[in-house]
Image (cartoon, rainbow, N blue to C red; front, side, top):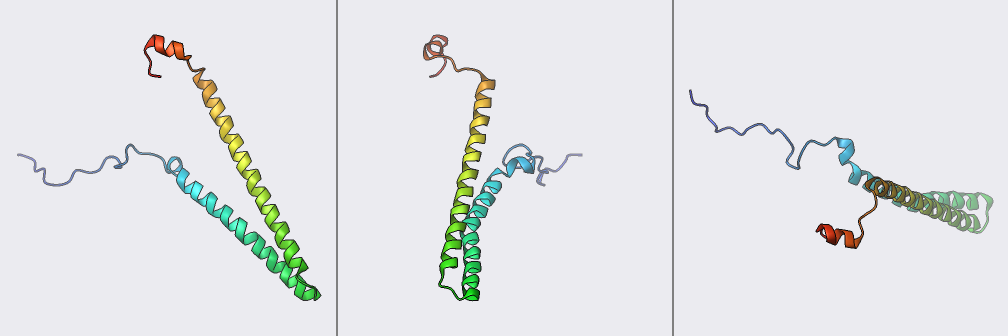
Length: 120
């Protein structure tokens, strides 16, 4: 008996190519989360510490000196930590790039590429 081909065949693989583990696909998600957490740190930490300074100023009956000083200290600390993290990430990426280049070996010289007919 002839088989009817009117139904849609089952999907064997996702439309974006072969099956990929979720941990391998989550790089953009991790980058978005990292950026969002840094943004909250840059805004939230000085704001919370500034509110603590404001409460300390009200409790001691002083001018807003604690509010200003604590907010500036928190802002400088968070900015320093952000710069430190960025530099550490750049060093890690450079080390990975150097390791990949060392594994690949030196690139042929321009005259060697022309002699072998490779694209330059």
